[in-house]
Structure formats: structure tokens, C-alpha cells
Image 1 (cartoon, rainbow, N blue to C red):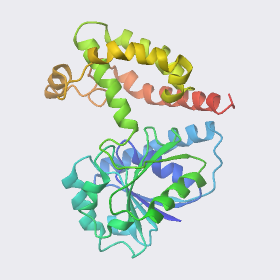
Image 2 (spheres, rainbow, N blue to C red):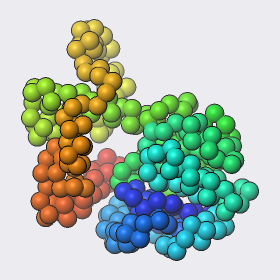
Image 3 (cartoon, rainbow, N blue to C red):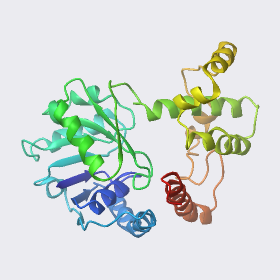
Length: 304
């Protein structure tokens, strides 16, 4: 299959590499030359992670295209991975429309914009679908598949079957909702975590330790719904009856995050966020965390 991956931000390089390793002809493109250079430079690190996972290389070629038309020419599937703004995605869809064949499927890797919202800006909504990878995409095996109101069932099935053919785990949503499932759960967790730190209940470092070695440790092997059964629904009913009303329910963004964002303290991308990062850490942390995730996945799959 010929696949074009448009957008070489944090997700595109890993997506393209994983698809190529699965035997598909992949062409990658980004308007920003710096993003293309960074994506190419990341390939040895990504390949090392894939080799660590024991994922066989099926020999699919990966090419960094010189332009959008070259990337999309003859593609069976185009995956859009540009910034999370409707107007940016809509502009790309308009550019893609005359370049794609009549049977080409267009997928978006949006993290949470409803597929139905984006569908209003595509020429062929029946062949438009959400394909939400999780970061880092070459290591995390779960991919959400989301159809919009006008997505054809066969388009959803096409993406689901592609994911399965890569020995990855498709999760097909029954309904298109903002944030889908993974990010709705994640952002509910993050809202409570940020509130606990901001209100002075706990330090940020201790919060991470609590989650990593408490609920995070359990959730890596026992999903939330099965965790309810393990703990007992009567226990959940009892605790939730008084605790739910105490949980953070704010509708806006916390002032702690807003203030840091206004100051340009955006996290690792700027060297300062909720934590400060040295130049050495900015270089070493991605590879270290990738290696840890590879080892954890192998253990969870019974290969560790």
C-alpha cells in the first residue's frame, strides 16, 4: 500500500517509520524544512526502538518528499498530522483535494477535534476517518479509529484492518466525541493532578511518583473497568458517593498552566515548564523514556 504522512511534528516521524517497517511504501512531507531535517535525524533512534521490540522489517521504503504533490501521488491512504487547528487542517484538505485519487482514504491524527467537525471541510467525507495514534507512535500499540457522521463503514473497516495487519491494536469508537476516549480519560486525570499541585496538596515530583507507582502501575495491567470489578463495585459506590463531589470540576484551564504558557514556559520544548530541563536532559530523556516504554511493552506482552 502507498501511504502519505503529512506533518512531521512530534508524531509524524514515528508513524511513518512504523508503517514503512510494516511493508508499506511511505512518503513523508512537511512544509517546514527544519521539521523534515529533524524527522530524518530521528530515524536511527526510532529504528533502534522498533528493533528492540522485535518488530520485523518488512522492507517498506520511506521517502521524504520534496512537495505535497509528490507525497500524495498515487497514495491509497493519506494521514494528516498537522497542528490542532481546524483552519490549518481545512486549508490542507483543500490543497489535498485535487491531488488525491477517487478511492484514496484521508485519515486525520487529530488528538481530539471531532471527526464530524473536520468532515465539513473535506471533498469526500465518506472516505474521511480519524486514526488517532498515541505518542510515541512507533512504540505505543493502541490506535483509536473514529468515524464521523458521514464516514462510510467500509472506511472505518479499512483503517481497522490496516492497524491489525501491523500487529497493532485498533480501538473503534462507537460514537464521535471531542477528545475521543484516550484523551478524555487522560485530561480528566490531568485536571485533578494539576489541581492537587496548584492547591498545595502535593509537590509535582511527589504527584508523579504517586501516579507512576500507584494507579499507573496497576493500570498498566488492569484496565479501569476491570479494576472496578477487582476492587468491588460496592466499594466504588461507597467511595464515589462522597468523593465525586470533592473532585476538581473546573471548566477552564488552571492559572498555574495558563501563567506558564503566557511566559513561554511550555515544557521540554522550551527547557522550562512545571520542571526545568538541562541541555543534557533534553537530549537524553526522549531516548531513555523510549527504552523504558519498549522494555515495559515487552513485559506486558510476556516477552520480557
